[in-house]
Image (cartoon, rainbow, N blue to C red; front, side):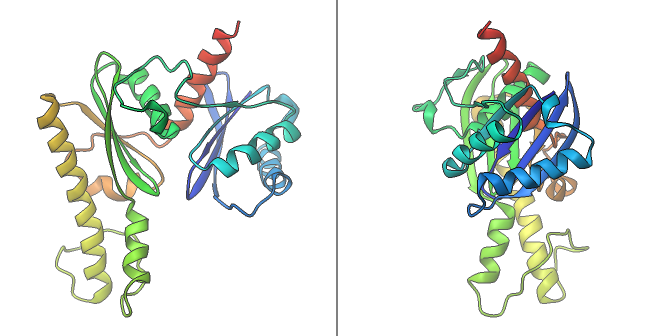
Length: 258
């Protein structure tokens, strides 16, 4: 079995693969104050609840955009499953051509998503990742990672609207019945939800115009399902895209080491 870990700014997604099948996965809140022992207790309990024995996990791979937690999960993997994890960097054997001025600046989660998307579609693709930030990545049919766009995340923007104003409440991220709100809550929901759907569609259309192609547009990330129903450009949701990319990279990295 393989333990794949995606450490993000808001959430940590852990998945266990048996051969090529994702058999279990969990989403934890990112908490900088937790120690390796505390995370080990949480993850160990989750494994046990799904009848997965730590000794049956023979490998671990990690992508992280939170450097302090990278070391913590390195220690966690060694203590929990007795394995030194593989840590994703831009120098890993990802198989893509990076058309980025400084590849080390690419968030490794974006790189992992690009690997998974290119392996799945083998054509030009736009990946929209709804996380703490909303990111757009473009991969060509030839496997070139062209770059992308980074916008504020849906929840981050909604939280800021609440915390930076005196009278606006915190609202649930749900699609209201009308774009014309009849009270403060529905007005905020209309602005946030339809506004972000418009942001996604406009950026996708501008990317299409700039590259002169109509790529397949896929969405991933914890908030993807929230916006997809009112987006006109997203064609498919791949909720486990990052974990799938980690599995692909683990296979490549271990085979390249003999």
